[in-house]
View (cartoon, rainbow, N blue to C red):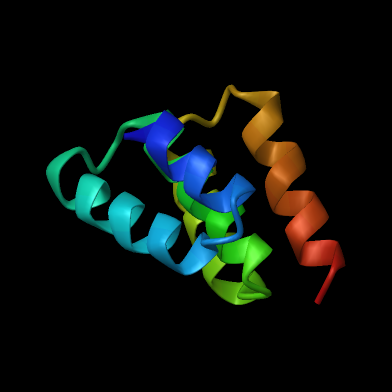
Length: 79
């Protein structure tokens, strides 16, 4: 699912990527790749607040992962 969504983003279909990843999140709500892809897809569409919400969810689920903390900080800085 993650690779498919990434491909959708690369070919200019971030809205479809969000749709695919939202469906996947319903089935796998704590899967980090899905959440990371969803944050990225939201950001690619200019939906920074949605991207931040997903990034914050990642940070809550995986507080020891510096990558997710950095993502939250970067998205917060862009407000």
